[in-house]
Length: 220
Ligand code: URA
Picture (cartoon, rainbow, N blue to C red):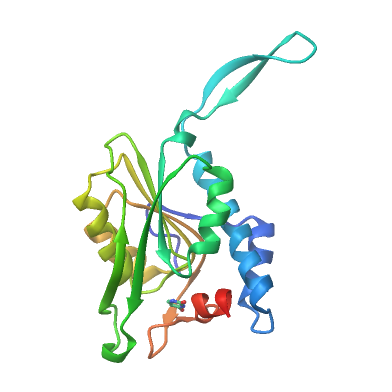
């Protein structure tokens, strides 16, 4: 990989990389895997919040003196969309940073039986419930694996039926460069926050080296 694709932020904090390494390991069981995704959701949330504008404020401490501080008004301006089922633990972590987020869910299934390689994957949605999106809001879509971009493109299509947000952010654990470029070619203003970028897809459309099937590993 030569550099990162534009609008892509790599969470390369050693703690995040350590957690990722743990969940990549096939000997890591369900509970630790799920807890790892929760931790990474929180870390992704921190990095996303770092890009929000801050305002200065003053509070009075219990000592009855004033202390200057910082507020992040957009913390309460987030809509969080969870791609079921693998993103549920990631959302749990993101909610630590954006506790007042309104939430949407999309139940998506990659139709592996019709996959013929490349980036085109048939994706079936069995349930979609997303709140109306205001132009002042920041939408964060949580999906741990951005492999081909097929699911993400379809999810964004559903969101845009309900409104165009101020910012569109993908919170992922592992992404491929091909998928990032594909979603950015359709949605050039989107932003991708990811903990790692892997280079390849296997014949079933799984990311290599990846971490396997994130849903199966998190839910047993
Ligand atoms: N979904 C997963 O769970 N893993 C992959 O490698 C790709 C998509």
